[in-house]
Amino acid sequence: MSPPSARRRDVVSLTSRSRPPRGSSRSFAKGPHFVTRQHRSVTRAIMDDMSDTKDLGEMCDTDLGFCELWENEMVAFWRSWNDMAETERHKVRDVDIRWLVKLGRVDEKFSKPDLVFNNAKKLSTLLPDANVPNMLQREPNVLNINFVRASQSILELQSVLCSSDRCQDVTPVIERHPRLLLCEDVVAEVDSAKARLQELAPSCDASKAISEYPELIYRIHNYGEYSELPISIQNIILETSNEEVDEILESYNSRWDDWERERGDVPS
Image (cartoon, rainbow, N blue to C red; front, top):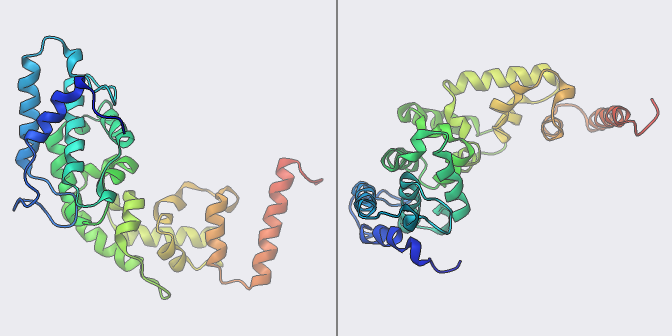
């Protein structure tokens, strides 16, 4: 990465001056470490500096292309997140910082450093090993979750992810599919997904399918009949089917033939 230009030195130096020591007693374990006062001081420092600057262009972040005051505040916030992160996997890349800052243009909550920090801290407390910025990109609405309800959902999801064959760690699953945290009633939604799977594919082992592919909890309801299912979901169903191997292959070949006919690749 090229060295910072002189035009963004003020914002970066402000962040550095307000950075707390890593050993701060107010940090939280395993996830990115922060001190609440830090972000308020960063914001105040930027605002004080901006008040003395007649040319707003001088405060533009030339690397990421942001010039608005709140955008610079959010750039400083996400860069301070990286400074406090314990490991590389918890850090957020510049390309992701750009995406998250732009999100503030359509969702006001993502333009407020204190609000993002407070809720991101709670998410990191619930899921210490998760990459919270990645979760926010995949499902911005997790910033608004009820954290008491979310903690219960995590416990319920952990029981769902434990099938008779294996037990998955809930953290990487939720990091990949943060929408699962938005379930109002995990048990009810799992039961609903199982019922829908059984309707679409009676031979499918619905419990096993959902425990191994929990995204089916919210994906399966998007389809009206089996033929509408994407190949990825059809493969999941085949993998967890109770049918004999020969029957599975026959069913798979039949659907493949139908697909080719629809494309016009073979005579009907």
